[in-house]
Amino acid sequence: MSRKILLTIALFCVISATHSQNLQLHFDPRNSLYGDEVSGVNYLTATFEFYKPDKWGNTFMFVDFDFSFNKANPGLVYGEIAREFKIGDFPLLPHIEYNGGLGLVRGTGSGFSIPGAYLAGFGYPFQLGNFYMNTYLAYKLNAFEQASNDVQWTVTWNASFAGNKLSLGGFMDLWTEDKSFTEGSDASGKKVVLLSEPQIWYNITPNFSLGSEIELSYNFVNKFAESKFYAIPTLATKWFF
Image (tube, rainbow, N blue to C red):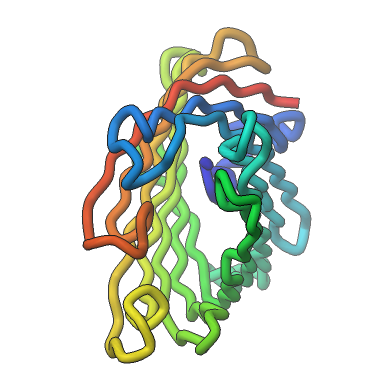
């Protein structure tokens, strides 16, 4: 869920190499908040994140498992993998990324594929007060049945306070995609999709945290319904390996 939070190179200065991978467990109450228009059930999501810097740049990946299928079995798997390259003292980092996934329709067992997306652009890490930030702008190929040529802008942030007892992090994605993907082949033009997931964590120990994430979205949660803004908070735990 906490897609790209560890992407910034500057974040490596904040947490040690032992904190380059973590496992999160989120309770998602979206059915209680919005009913069947969003999801038939509340469910748990497990997220594994991995971040590895090296002398050539950094690699980030994550995978989400939504336990939203019958009898709380996994109903959706979604992942991303991204690489940024350092070129001497050049301030911009070439950025490449892939994301996609698979899912099951609750109650039927029929499967579906989340169309993959391929991104290429440039990232820029910077610091703003206590916040270590990264932003990138990329061309995005949405591999729908009819390919959609788009653009995505992403901002990530991370900060620690109170002697590293309190942590803030998150990301914001803003991208375009063809309306025909969700509105039928006769639809023309682009629509804008917003997804942001700010997080807050209380670090009980250097390895174990309790916290919350709020999924803020527009044109994302229910792509096939009327455009709508959603705010979905979670209760979460996190373990750093």
